[in-house]
Structure formats: structure tokens, C-alpha cells
Image 1 (tube, protein in one colour):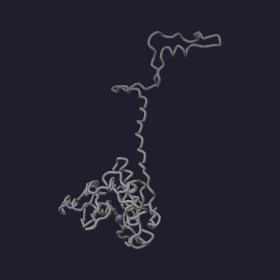
Image 2: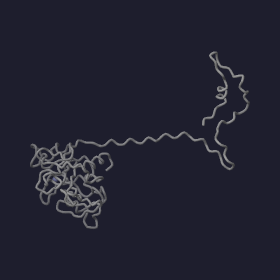
Image 3: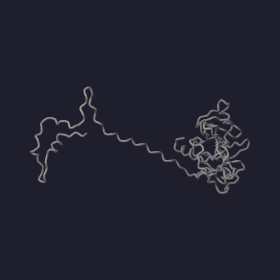
Image 4: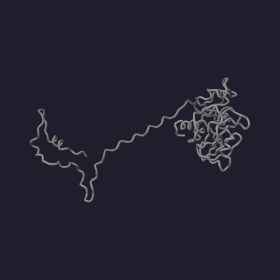
Length: 283
Ligand SMILES: [Zn+2]
């Protein structure tokens, strides 16, 4: 409660008219000495001390502004380049929270076959053409292939997403574990990671000699989310492909009403989700 000063008390006891103000003669004379406290707080009980007056509430600390959602040009999931197949339109993020599989950006999700330098390229140009190393991102999970892919309209398709690293160079750009788990196999061009969630991540075309050097024994193959597991290259079991990561996610899913079984699931939405976090510095 606000305490009134002596001056304020005097003003309260002063009557005013249009001609001015004068002290009300009817008012009792003021006593000299300090004014009586006007607080109505009860007196503290014996042995207690009076509580301090309540301070004004502190202003709410201002929350730091939420980071702007990172964005970059990317086509929606399922929007494949014309003539390259019919894409899945499933918007599910099948691996919510996963780490983007390249350690650093920028990275370019697009087709190796239907991009420059591929055998169905839109025009002349090599795999290192600057147009391949540019946005927008494009989904190619359902790109035309003869491989079984139950999540695609055709029942067949590419099974994964192709991603080019920041530059057109082998053995430079690190690949990392999408989640904590265990590397269950290292083939001639495929690394399989069984995540703690039960999902399986498959990384193709790494520098396989480098992968084997990092994980020489079965005891060495438990990995943490974000741990380096190899570098982007073009290994293809004795042949070569273009410099890129082919990335797959497998998870239990029911297709066409059948009991759930482990299948390739659309990859693009999880990559968009995780790349946005990477660009925001959240990893
Ligand atoms: Zn591929």
C-alpha cells in the first residue's frame, strides 16, 4: 500500500473553490510530529518481524526469439522431375529427429540419372556441372527402377534418395550416423546401420576402404548419432558411379493391408526435416 506523505495529507485537508484553496477551518488541527503510518497491515505478532513490503513484480524476462525456420529452395516430396517416375505423396516423416546424414552442408538432393552427367540427363554436361550442385532439392525415392518399392505408386522404384555433397570431390565430405545404433554390415558399396529406434539406414557409394579402416572389427561398430562413418565417394562394387550418397531408410510398415514388415520408406521428408535443423545449427 502506498504511504501518504505529510504534504499529501495537507493537500487532502485543504478545501478548494473557484477562488482558490484554503485550509478548511473545520478540519482538526494537525498534530506536529511524524505522521501516523497509514498502513492497515496487522502488527506483527510478538516474536515475528514485519514482512518487507512486496516489491513490484519483476517484468517477465523476454524469451529469445525463436530461430526462423531454415529454408532453402526444395520441391515438395513426391514431385519428381517430369518423365522420371511417379512419386510417393506420403508426407510422413519416417525418421523424425534423425541427424542429416552428411556432416555439413550445403548438400543437394537430386537425381544422378536424370541430372546432368546421368544417362537420362536433360542435356549435355558432366556430373560436376554447377546445375547439379545447386538448389532446388528434388525427391527421387520413386524414380523409375525395376527394384521393388512398395511405397511407390508403381510398386517399384529407386528405394532411396540421392544427395550430392557440397563439392564434386571424392573422399572429402563426411557421412555421419543418422541415429545412435550399430553398424551391422559393411559390404562392397553399402553400409547398414541399425538404429536404436529399430529403423535401418543404408548408405551407398562411400569410400569403402575408409569405412573399413574406421570399423576394423565387429567390436568397433557401435556408433553415436552424428558420429563419422565414412566419406562420400563413388564406389559401386568394382564399378564407379557418380560422386554422391544414396541414402535409404527401412522401417516396419504395412503396405496394401498386409501385416507390417520392414520396407523401404520415403526418405525425402526426413531429409528435409533434418537438413532444416542442420542449417539452423541444431544438427
Ligand atoms: Zn540412388
